[in-house]
Image (tube, rainbow, N blue to C red):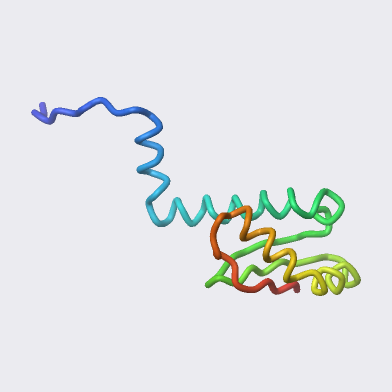
Length: 98
């Protein structure tokens, strides 16, 4: 049997420590971006959104409708600003609609 002694910790402290691990924090960030996209853009645009991924500060968003894709390109700066404000960081530098 091991002689290790463990100190009791609050669950919030343990979860905070786990969520700060690189791979988990990256996954949580991507999930948060998807949630924010749905929140900011609303259900009507979310229905036409197929895939969202973040790579090297660029947010790639696949849109089913060519006409909607063009409209979103016109509002890219505003969307970028809203997403970064909600994230409370400059996590996204550019959005590419494809």
